[in-house]
Length: 351
Image (cartoon, rainbow, N blue to C red):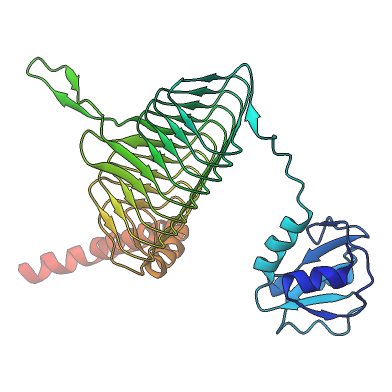
């Protein structure tokens, strides 16, 4: 594809020749002739002089003169990079149709142009929307509803009566609607299981990562809001409500009945206790532990979670603890020596 065409399709300002032929998008260090790369962070600007790429996406405000490479200038270089990747992506999606090895209940309702892969199972009364793709060995439980233009990758399990919206992507091995972890202690000390039969709802334009699990509650519902993106190996417990445009990175865990409001970001391995509320726009850095509710707009870190600036200061102190311990020990020694020297004087004055 000519660079000129890419600039037009991505609405970028072109500096340099538009006749350059581009074959793929690559990182600035790995790029080769024929590749389009990008700089979203100015700290990588020095690599412009060494990259082998044929053209670069840069911020409109970035001063990269002199540059021997053609440039695509934009106010959002990272977004344009993502769009450029889409131009060259060659997704190998299966053709519409039902594979003969799949098992589809007689009363299941399938929309136009659906694709049901080998060994997939569609339960009784389930509904699959138009153009949705169900990859091999995925299981759609009885009464489940899947919207239009969804993609369910291999071995996904959608349990009974779960409701999935439109344009939802669920990566390999995810389980939606598994039993919540609910038990009550009996008089003899044993634990009786609380039946988990309530609803799970995933709204439109959600993406759910590989081997992520979203549990159903005993009563009420577990809900994932529109446009939220959930990474791999995330655990969302029973009765959790996740707002719109929320981001969960890998290995996040959210305990039962917690409310996560819109536009919250939880970085990798963040843990959230149950029955809490995280206000709109909260950001928790990696490995934060959250035992209490957090007001909207807070940037938090550490365990127990505190404001990020306080955590950074505390981390600096923590690194100096060995030296501080040594100083305290030395001060203790000196105080003891002074007390020993002063002791005869104290006894003399007493006499």
